[in-house]
Structures are given as structure tokens and as C-alpha cells.
Length: 371
Image 1 (cartoon, rainbow, N blue to C red):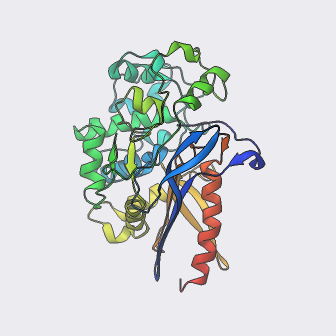
Image 2 (image 1 turned 180 degrees about the horizontal axis):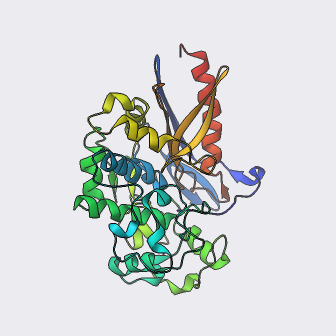
């Protein structure tokens, strides 16, 4: 899910639990602190069940890279998908009003001109109607002209993967990514084990987005939807569109995973040349390269990691619930963060802020190692 700007850091509450993982030549460390779920009484928060490295977390938008981008990396390497093909080669219903100009590359760069977010669960009665709505909502700018981070674009990319493979998004991800990489704790819609971090207190964040019309104006109020979750979101996908419309499986959100699996995924991409049975190294390098907008590659975000006197580029992605993954190609560096940042009474610390702090910490620790 995409959200608007956060308030000043002084007003933010830290997550009740967090796990950090670093893997690099000569260094492998994972540390957890806090609780995976909480109970409120009289406005006070009490932690329940310690968070561990094996705790399963809702990945939210980390799905965009562990699932969708990684699938497309494999499909492009195998010649089954063309990054510069129009989206409607794979999804014929995506046409009219300039849509024929939108390419897969545009969507991976968030330059497809699509809306950032839309509550499909209010406007649609079923999955097919939601797909048609994503295809028909008006573009907000001309394709290829500006970056507008879009969940809708990655919903389309998930369907492109299905069209190219003949499989659903979950099955395609299992065959192309999680299976070959041995990610046994990574799957869509529900966690693979009982050690689970609660994702959110309820659906209040999306309801508030709709009622405030901030940051995305939509023609609804929260009363238009009767199925808001009023209880803690535990073992379910927090993202409203993924949960209420797509049964927990979509190109933009829906995966659950663990820190060990995230490190395994990131390590494989950090050593991408050693995995040429999965993808062509030259194709991976195209996905890793900086795009026309600072900090954005094909699907991946780009971050700076300062280690001693060297500045490296980390490729990865954050997720709304509080997780992030990253790697440094050719250096063997894998990084992963998992938290339940939404389980607070006030304003949660943004994932991007948690990630930035972790990158500083990781840089210091890597600088003290033999790297």
C-alpha cells in the first residue's frame, strides 16, 4: 500500500518488535527485540509473545520485488516477456486513452501514468471487476513522463506474469522464485507457520485515508464499505486491496516471509552471477541500473550504504507494514528488516525511516568486519 507523508519524527512511536539481519563475507548476524503482537488496556500497550528471527511477517510492498520483480527478471531472461512491449500485448483489455503506450518497463519504473492507489474493494464486487477497473481508471499523466509510485501498476504486472506463464501469481512465484531459491517460509495470503507478527490493529489506516482524502482523493467515504476489519489483523494480509479483493494474492502485496528467507533471497541477488541458471547476468544488470528518476531501478529502489570510506548501492524495497529487504550486487551483502510498526497508539515510524537507520547501523557493522 502507498501512503502519504509522515508527521515529524518527534511524534512517532517505535514498533513493539523488530528484527534486523545482515549477511556478508565474514559476517552473518540476526538480532530480534520486542514482541510480535500486543494487547491494549486503558490505552496502554502490553507486548505478547517475543519476536524471533523465525517470526513470519506480512511483506506488504516487499512483494513487489521478492515476487513480481523477481518473476519478471526470470521471464525476461528466458525470453518469455519483453520489457519494452506494450502492456496490452499481455493484457488486451488495457487499451484506449493512451494506454497502448504504456510498457512493462514503464510500470517497473512507476512511470506508467497510473493512479497511485484506489480502494478497489469499494468499487468492485469481485476479482474480475477489480481487474477491469484497474484497466479502465483514467491515467493521471502521460506514460513515461513522471514517476508516480503505483500499486495499480504492479497489480497489472502480476497479471502479466500470469498471462506469460499460464499460472496464477502465487503458483508462478513459487515456480520461478521461492521454489528455486529454497524460500520455504515465503508464500502468499497467509503465513507458513504459527509464529506470526500481527500486521495492524485493524483497517483504520485505509478508512482514514479515504475519509481524509489524503493523500489520494477518491469518490467514496469509509461508510461505503461494510466489511472493515475491526479486530487485529493477524495472519492476514494488511493491504486492503490485496485482502478484500484479491484473496491475498496480487502483484503489489500479499507475501508473508521471514528474515532468514529474505536474507536468502537477497544473498542470491547479491551473487547474481552465480545463479545464471535462473537469470541471465546481463538482464539482472539492466534491472539493477538506475532509471530516469533518482533512487528507482526496474522494480527495485536504490539506496546508499556507506561502509568505511566507500559508498555502495543497495537495491531493495520497503513495505508498509514494516519490512524491507536489500542487497549489494557483486559484494555479497544481504540486508533484511522486519517489524510490526503499525501496532502503536499514535503515529508509527515510517518503514523508510527504520530502513535508513538500519542502513547506517549496517554500514558501521560492515565497516568493522573484514569486508
